[in-house]
Amino acid sequence: MDLQIAFGSAAAKAGQEDLVQQEIHQDWVNREYIEVITSSIKKLADSLNSFDMPCCSRLATLNKRLTALQWKIKYVQAWVTKGETLT
Figure 1 (cartoon, rainbow, N blue to C red):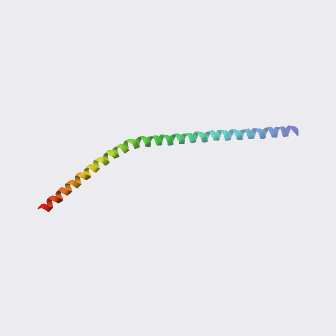
Figure 2 (cartoon, rainbow, N blue to C red):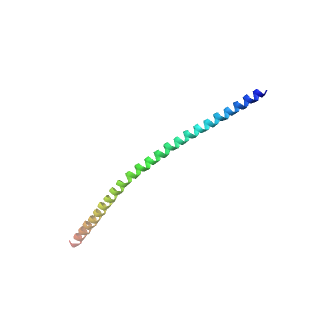
């Protein structure tokens, strides 16, 4: 009877160790998955930041050009309107 108890206790202990090993393995799998996701998010953020800088510069240049064109259009409109009132 003592042998059965000892064997049962050893089997239970081995079962617990297997469970702990499975939990540790699953924890590492989860950590690796989180690392992959984190790395992907960082790469995406870097990519967006590298895209943003030239875009802002180009948009600022375009804004200056459009502003200059708007002033030219207003000048031409005023010139045409003035010419129409003189004739």
